[in-house]
Length: 125
Image (tube, rainbow, N blue to C red):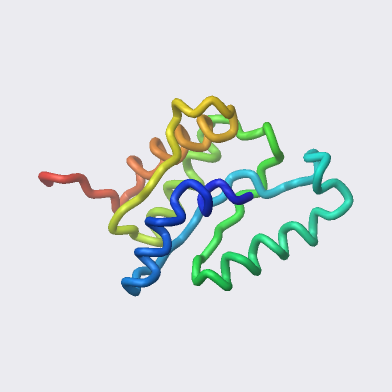
């Protein structure tokens, strides 16, 4: 729930301070199977969204359970649709070589989805 904020806080804050729109896509956002949040799922979600809003970050929650992020067509399509809607100038994607399975899978799906977005452009094109 806080990996983007911890891992890319400096980049996020610099972008916000420069007046850029910052959108964070969070794959794991169904906390019903995480022991630390069981029974408090709605409170955790409200807190995550409250912190993002306070920072000035738009957060999109994909609703996957903890340790249940698969690299499949559905999640890739969701990333592509979001990228097509947001039309980012730059996208930071968590490494698919991360040791945490949810991170690696979200990284792979995010990369594939964003690369396949209809509005994606690449350097040199």
